[in-house]
Picture: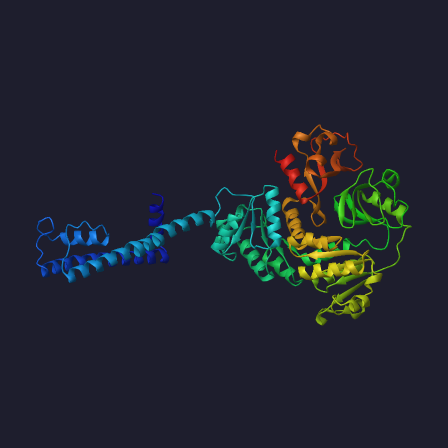
Length: 576
């Protein structure tokens, strides 16, 4: 019963395809009816030829017996009450039976599939991949491109239960994504009607991550429909595209290549034991520092009275690319990198204590002279670090003073870049396979060197770590975090690939509990590194936390954890 209304709607929906279906169906019906009519007339002619005036039951043959015999023979029922005895009649009976079988096994199934089953399936698929969102949809994010950045952003939006919709022009692709759990709407990204259908006037943000030209078209189309209350965020590959995208209506233009270069440069510790800031939450600074050559090597944090000596808080440590939470019993080795949290004054005090310790002067080797490689070089230059760029394509070489021309896969090229004397090698090429290959090569060539690598897809991150990279950064995670921060007006600081520092309001059911009673670290794997609390009318970050510290209404927790522990925390404490 459900198929019939769907079929009627599909056949009469007013579209050209619907009328074409009607014509095809009428044609098939007319062919069958014509055959029945002709066969009925031929029956009486052959019956007259055989002098057959009665049936096998001695009943007179009437005019309607021609239709009766034709239908019985076509359906292969074969009642036997009317039969021919001469060869012509028998041959004619075979023809009618064959056409009947052809109708049952070919025409009828084809008609059912074409005019009943297919329309029903199309209606079901259309319901799964709608072209419009409900009228009450609001506060959602409209994504216009399917790429690693958007896929990572979708996962984060799901984590925080923020509604979204992905625009897909191809219906089959939309159906495939829907079956994977992605919320999709069918429509072209350059069609104003598409944005009206997905309630752009009630959306929180429109995100365009495709080519610069397509992003400009999307921004201009959206801005013609809505004012600046709806944010339009676009990515830009070329520097010249920034102004054009802003003129088109994009409020936030993100040059992800430059940001990636700055991030990779921040991971380079340098030639000293001083703390280098990698991010901040208001006045709370997050920094990293090497301890090579300092007196605290070989001691635990408790044995060297670290908090009293530096006035800062160690929230975690890196050791050969592996992050671990820090506690009083954490032992410091030559390869340890401290992750610190504190105010500007605290970080300055730390640097005053450790500024006397300097490592041997060295330089950084950057493999790849593309956008990311050049951005990394500029960021290193601002920090006063020397660098050499290894680039195979001659047209990318800007200043020969800082470049070595050749393939990084050749040992003589790397030796010309003095890789054995370098403290760090940063691999910035746009090919995952190349990055993995060079990571393995550099780790075998220089076992103690710091290796920082770029990843272009999420599945290669763990592979790069196994290949020997100390730190890995990907476009997807960085882009998704930046866009999410713009949406939430919050901070999610990506310390390294898969490890974030994030801030969240204290859940009501934790009010009045102590940090120990909350069991945040035991239940989720996240660690509380600071509490933002209003004291005397001013927001203050409490850093040196006592386990018995009671959590108060209005507190904001600053936590550190990987993607899995962050998700567990949200499900355990926020969704409950």
